[in-house]
Image (cartoon, rainbow over all chains, first blue to last red; front, top):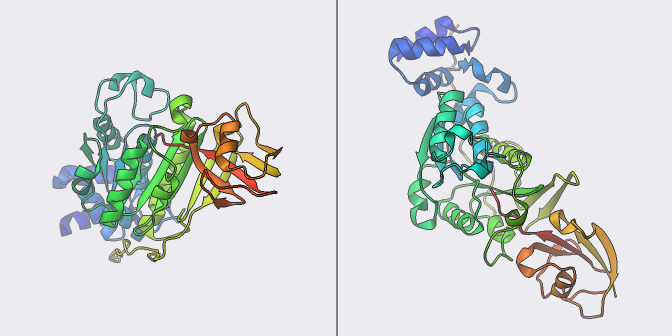
Length: 295
Length: 74
């Protein structure tokens, strides 16, 4: 490991490791891109692909993102964009969960859907895409429908669960599982020109509260469908929340739901009751400090 | 009695954003929802004067009723 570190340090441009150097390190030492990136970040070196994340994110924060594991439940409209952005951000491990294959009606909006992928599993497309975009990111594809029966197994060791489901009943099962496992959940939902986002930390009940009038069936998306841009907007808001949860910074959409209306270009916020016992934020995820690099 | 009704998202399509309407004393939220041609199943959030309310909440003179549709897609 010292050899690889020396190799990286000798070829660093300041603290930055160019992509070609990462490639050489992978070939020369027989390591994965993930192992090279881990070594770099752990020692205060920044893969150059993340240079525009600075100074918004420090190298310590980049390491924190790299060491975290998120689950994206649903790899369709929201999920495709969430996975893309998480991979570019530098989230180290993404568990992609979806039982479906791509169909023609997905092509108008789902980032991972292409004519060549029709009939292929969405989770396999997620893995292929991330391998192309950021080979240091590990995607664990799970071709299954999330429910309370398999939820504990699927979310084991997960830092944040991201809701990209298209079913309210499965979404409520996800919220229940996250509550039981004390996992933060970023909820997003879309329909037509409209969507909303909210964050549920352990002890919160906002997802249940949002759907408290729901009895069965789908929402307005059943009649309106979904265009290209609504999932992109809502997914972006969700990934910003994920980033903040992992790094313990900023104000989360906690006890409030942000509603986006892209037809009238309005953003409205609805407040929800705080539970009797509110768990303090930030959560102690970001505990890594890179070792100071010599020279 | 006078009730201000505010509609959000798809509920505005073919209706209005904001209207002051006259209703009989004792009218509840459900009656207004149905009078607007909406169904209970379409309702995501009901707010009266900025606070969450149930469909059977009985409105008072001057109340503002806000209705938001159920959104669940991904």
